[in-house]
Length: 253
Length: 259
Image 1 (cartoon, chains in turn green, brown):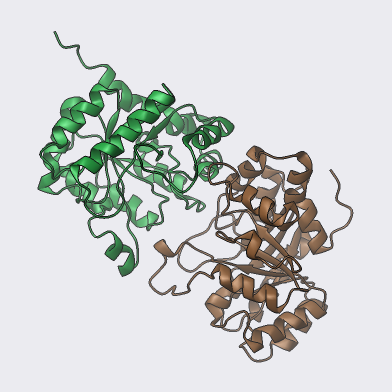
Image 2 (tube, chains in turn orange, red):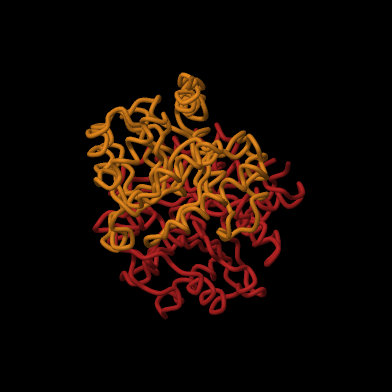
């Protein structure tokens, strides 16, 4: 999910609308970020994005969980991750500034492993040249495979299988990266997406998400030909397992 | 509450395997989801050169579900002999409306040939449907070169043929205040939202609750998102009923449905 804050606004009003949507659909917690979606933002812009998320977290405590958005190439990114995690964020969000396997990203991945937090990356596999031209450094499933081979212990989440890219290609490709999770969000509500993801990747790797397609996000899980146990794993148990990894870390002496 | 789904399809799409894509499977899914009636067209009508064969297939397959499925013809106004096909659809095949695919058949809705077909269908008393798109362009097959229709395309055809009965499927981004108030149209909700973006409410505010119709996009789509939209829509029962079935029933001339 994305929220408004820190001077960044999406095209629909206030965060209260997001909470209202979650209430109506029975969503208990929202994991959110504010990424810069085009171009290379300055570190100052990145900090303002995260300030916006922190603001939303403070406004809706326990309801909104934050991802720390960073642009890996900046030396200050490590300190920014510390700042965000210290204030309660639960993971790291990368957008389309670097491919996930790029050496510039390695320190971020190593930091995420040390901190036991997931990395959620915006992803997709558009089928048109113009789709790629718009986001040349966007990672697709093959990029996740490459990064996961380098860091099999990392908790990578490929974002929005329904985000408009070729989802059959993406799911097939992700079979080669058993450590990578896949989120179900996006505006595409094609019949069979969730079932194929579960069949090919295993239910434990699939995470419920909306990316602001609220009814579609919930409805595509409710309507999938899966058992109640499988749906519960997708809706919350799998992600809870990810969150628990950080919670289980030994306390510093 | 009764439900009429104005946007369903059966048949094969050449670029992706579909499930639940026969008439009987569609009716089973309708039963599971509490959907009473569905307007259905053959996907084959999008890509067959000789489109009319898709109408024959559709008629044959849907005939035994006459109380549940409302079969709509597919025709291409640029293909020779559509006039005879239209007559056969109405008189021999029992079809009762028309779905058009200008983005796949290569014309503008307001082209003279298109208007001729629209007028002929309207003369029969048929409602007309036009999908803004069939699949998301971002995941299209390299050979699927059709572009989405634009809001301007819909505005133009409403201005050109305001008396025809229009249903716009898979539509998003239509500004209700810019669609001619004197025209006769419904916008189907499968790509719109009840919460967050709230473009269903925006359409109600701009054009009235009488302008929306429930639709799922089966067999391309999972039906449950559309059902959820109705369920969580923050409005009166009366408005929900209009969207769920009353508006569609009126446009389709269905009588005898009641809560």
